Image 1 (cartoon, rainbow, N blue to C red):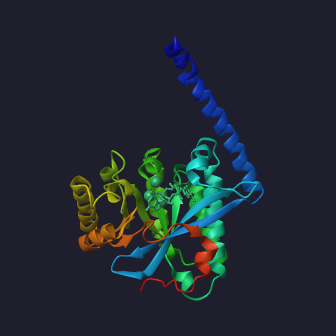
Image 2 (tube, helix red, strand yellow):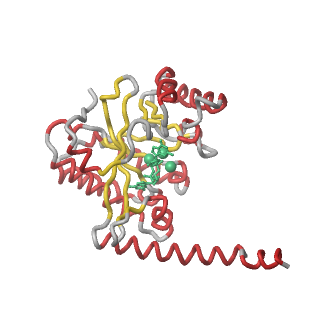
Image 3 (cartoon, rainbow, N blue to C red):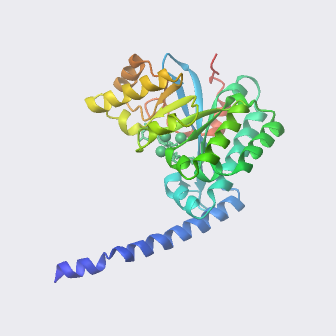
Length: 278
Ligand code: C2E
Ligand code: CA
Ligand code: CA
Ligand code: CA
């Protein structure tokens, strides 16, 4: 009897309804946060393995609750995607990041900046026009921008995606394939358009010193990227042994908690220790 009760308590359709309600509430919260200016830019530094003083950063968006709690993207990005709010978030991120960089002086203006591109933005022809306009308004060089795209972001409309990628590259921006190897057809995307940087998925990197299969996968991805003339980033570098291993393999960049955690972007901008790549 207890078993039957348990089954009725955890009916899947019931929890789906709960999830849906929760997500609608999150989506309403995102709209409010955009209106009330409660999105924040965080960024995580990425270093060159051969010279860790050479830095770049990946912009990571955060939402701040009315009570000041910082909400990570894993909580609100899925809802933003489902309720058509992610395009607005991506545009805000471009506007805010380039405005902050545009105000900076000296070397900061030349530090490469990685931005995450959602499926909605990559399928939206006017996104590129928005980027161009913001570049002009802020005087930031297009060459410092690297747009990170995931396989899931590409899959929805390959033709439009290839056009968007082509335009961004013509402008002088670079393209990185994010979470590479995590999906079923990562390799297929390498045949579709030129890629400047391959980001090796953290799930292969974080255990690679303890798992030989992971090590072979990381090495193979790096070798293919090299053949294609692309640089590589190892994500989720969490200990010194992993950093040494990826460095010995010739991987270009390291990103992960060992190197730096995500920090408020304004604090990174204020750090004059940061040095642009030669
Ligand atoms: P992502 O692009 O793969 O970003 C890397 C995520 O891994 C970040 O989580 C980062 O904090 C986390 N991470 C970094 N180093 C380590 C490590 O050593 N170990 C572990 N376990 N995790 C690490 P975050 O900031 O929560 O972002 C999650 C995802 O949200 C991102 O994954 C990206 O897909 C999405 N996202 C973030 N900001 C934006 C944005 O502005 N626009 C769009 N469209 N998506 C965004
Ligand atoms: Ca990313
Ligand atoms: Ca990633
Ligand atoms: Ca990811």
